[in-house]
Length: 537
Image 1 (cartoon, helix red, strand yellow):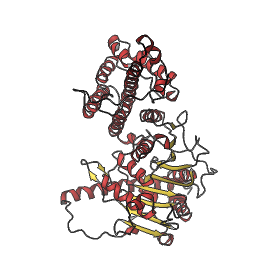
Image 2 (cartoon, one colour; image 1 turned 90 degrees about the vertical axis):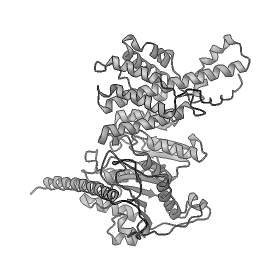
Image 3 (tube, rainbow, N blue to C red; image 1 turned 90 degrees about the horizontal axis):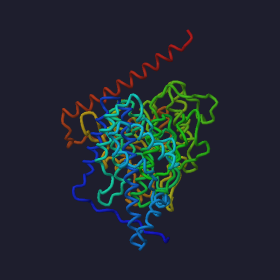
Image 4 (tube, one colour; image 1 turned 180 degrees about the horizontal axis):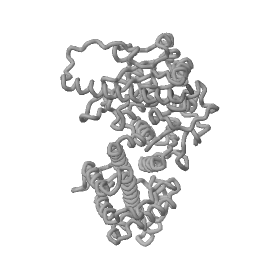
């Protein structure tokens, strides 16, 4: 049979739910189980069912497209079924094959029969067996004694009302991708501090990606959470008229449940990622030992005290990290993974920029003297709902020499410092986001300093800006004892007489900054007491 054209996207149908309606329906579904289990558990239930509904909707949509394509070519009706059962016709369009007993219509019709949990577990099992990339990924947790089957049946009924197709020309994958990201954010908020294990705020991920510009190459995240870094990198490529296969993603995740979320997230977005065949500790068992990445994006656990430390590890080229804090273990692992011209962006606690405890100062100095650090960004408070610890961004570059045909901006022996602590917009009394304008200013400043393609296209020239950015030499940094806090370098901003921040808002902002500093002070105090207690006196 000759190759067939892909069917055009459907127009929006009268009465079809909007994206807001869809999100509202699905969040109500989550509430069905909220009272009977904790946030971490119902996250797995709801996202698993949403994924099952998505693959079923996508399968049925593609099935109808195949039917119409075949009929349009004059194939008799009695021969159509053979084409509908050709798995390659689905795989070629990035659609998973869904056996009949796993299709949502089959399950919804039997939701009231008292065996819905057993049917759902079986559906997850057969989908994994027929789609190799999903092997070991989908949750089989619905037929347990602790699961209220009546509520589960009601949950299935609610999700039945959700349609991931029919939203204008948007494919089901894009619609569910948006819903999935929305849910990850909502569940991260619901879980509080635990939510930080699998979710990095969208504006922070966006800043990392905009700074690094991963147009093509190998993208790596050693602690990938639910895969948000990869999804944002893919969006960056597509927004710049690239293709999904322009980047190849590699990741690793320690937590089993989070690893499953990441695998589903990538599948939904059509990203073919190498997340290894199971979850594993990056320090204990590096699943990508030979990888040399072009881009690394990471948000490691802050100040992790319980980690698989080996003094003889070859990754510790700049010093052995302390047993009580893995910050500089993460940084050195990431540097060890960079390719010849690789770049990296890492989210870490502010203490990493100035700490001198247990040899951390010496490691930081060695990395600076090796000319690996390209940029440091101090972020504003309250970007993370899951922690009040102030955070910063570290950027590394294996080659800071001139780039491009014009060989602009030789930045060897220099580090760019950006103080963005006063940027961002409060979306409520507890959470701040970086706006598109904020992202453009920070990333644009870095690109202008670095002389990258983006800066040249905008004909931008880098200049130091008091209170915001400063290009420091290694001698400047040595004079500050290799401390990398941007506030030490950028100086004070000129007073803006037009500042319209109200007294109430200013007091609230300063109060939150003070609380964050006090929390960090308490953490350092605890660490000092632990270290003192280990002394043999």
